[in-house]
Image 1 (cartoon, rainbow, N blue to C red):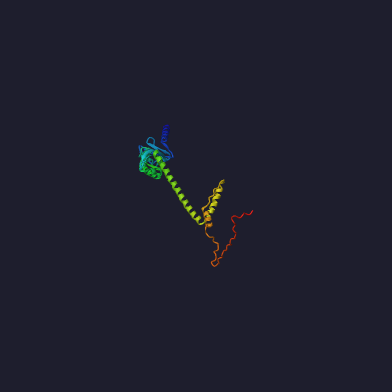
Image 2 (cartoon, rainbow, N blue to C red):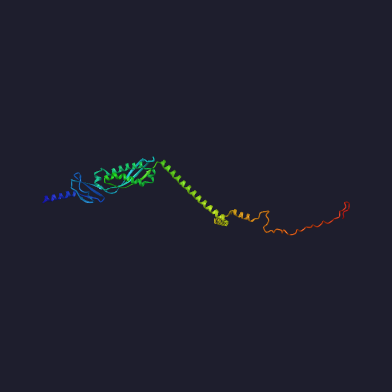
Length: 288
């Protein structure tokens, strides 16, 4: 009985040493005498044969791997420095354990080489503004080797694009010149529209002279609202033209003067005869 109890205790201890616990974010790959045995162990307790079985746990969480900055020359001959980040996870623990020695290190190296390749195929404007196409292209380049390692690429993002200082100054001058060009175009367009409206207003005021007087009065009201002590009132040229037309020209006959009748007899004008004054003698004494 003592021997049987001892053997039972040894058996229980032997079985207890073969109990393993797999976490929820892990999967277990069991090697029995060096070969993959059975299915992948799911989360929870699992029993292994002591001394015979070995289990390797594989993390199936999404791994965020930063890609070191890579220097390259774009297709338009601009030297840039680009870094990225790759999000991936293991979907086949057996391939990730058997077919590749270190899948994380392998993914890092492939990501660096793919990033250098995508830099050489792209232009600077694509790296700065058209990154969505570059992300998809880089993801496709990483998917091909990753499928053979049991890894799925979730997402690839370019983090930053470092430019030389000379290129930054050139781009700043270009942006400033473009904004200056757009500002001048907008100003010229505003002047053109204002000129059109002023021409239309001039035509309306020319056909209706009273509109100019109303506009003048409105301007006076607007100026007076500013509480100015001095008011300069312009004298309109149209008012001068009105006075010029109302004043008769010199030398013109009045319109209401009656013309003399043709059959009226001419009246002879008689002048009175001068009175005869007797001549005074030269040596006559002057009367006192």
